[in-house]
Amino acid sequence: MKKIISLFLMLLMVISIAPLLVNAEKDGMEKVNKPASVGTGTAREVKNENKETYQQQYELAKAEYTQNRENYQNAKSEILAERERIKECQTSETDDCPQFREQIREKNREFLLGVADATIAHLNEIISKIQASEDLTEDEINKIVEELQNYISEIEDIKGKITSASTADELKEAFRELKNTRNKVNKQSKLYVGKLWTARLGFVIERAEGLEARLDRILNELESQGYDISSLSETINNFNIAVSKARENYDLATEKMNEARTTSDSEHAIELLRESHELLVSANENLKTAHDILKDINDILRELRTSSAGASTDDTSGSSPLFMKANNQEQA
Image (tube, rainbow, N blue to C red):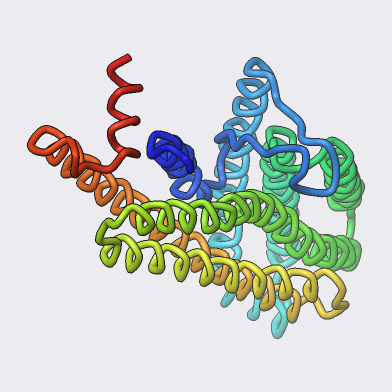
C-alpha cells in the first residue's frame, strides 16, 4: 500500500505544472521545458545568453515594425488627403499636374517601401520567437527560419523594383507583387505563430491528462482508508472536465490549422487561422480553470491531512496509518 506521503509527493508534482497552465497562453520568450518524448524530434534547450540575444532582436524588430507602420500610415494619409486634386488632374490637365503627379508617385513609393519594411520587421519578430523556442525541434526551427528568410529576400527584391520604378505602371506592378507576397506572408506567419502555441499547449495538455490517473490513484487510496472523498471526488471530476475541454478545443484548433495549411484560398486560410486562434484561446482558458482547480484539490488534501493529524493526537488507535507514517517521515 502506498504511503500518504507518496500521494502528497504526487500532488507536489501536480502543483508544479500549475505555472505552465497559466503561462501557456504567453506568446513571448518564456521557457517551457518539454521532454524529448513530446513533439516530432529531440527537445532543444536555449542557453540564457542566446535567449537574451533573441529577446533583443525581437524588441529591435518590434520597434522597427512600429516605426515603419507609422511611416506608411502617414504616407497613406497624405495621399488620401489629395484625392480631390488627383481627380481634378485626371479630368482636367493643368500646368502643375505633371509636377503634382510626380509628388504623388513619390508619396506612393514612400508608402510601399514603408509597407515592405514593416513586413520585413514583422518577419524578423517571428524569426526571433522561433529561434528562442524550446517547444520545437532544431530541424523544425531551421526549416521555418529558412522559409521566413526566403520571404524577406523576396520582399527585398520587390523593394528594389519599387525604388527603381520610373513610371506609374512600374510602381503598380511592384505594388501587385508586394501585395501577393504579403498575402502569403500573412498566412504563413499566422501558421508559424500557431505552431508555436500549439506545441506549447499540446505539451501542457499532455501533462494535465497524465495527472488524471494520478489523481484517481490518490482518490482510491484515500477511499480505501475510509475517508470521506465526496468533495475531493467532485473537485477531481471538475479538473478532468476542464482538461477534457482543453483537449477538445485544442484538437479542433489543430484541425483548422491543418486545413488552413493545405488550402490554396488565402482568404479562407486566414479565416480558418482566426477560428483556430479563438479555439486555442478557449483551450488556454480551460487550462487556467484546471490550474485553479488543482489549487482546490491541494486545499482539500491539506484539510484531510490536518484532520488526520488531529485524530492521531486524540486517539492514535483510530488514526490512518498512512497519515501516521507521513507524519513520522516528516518529523524524521
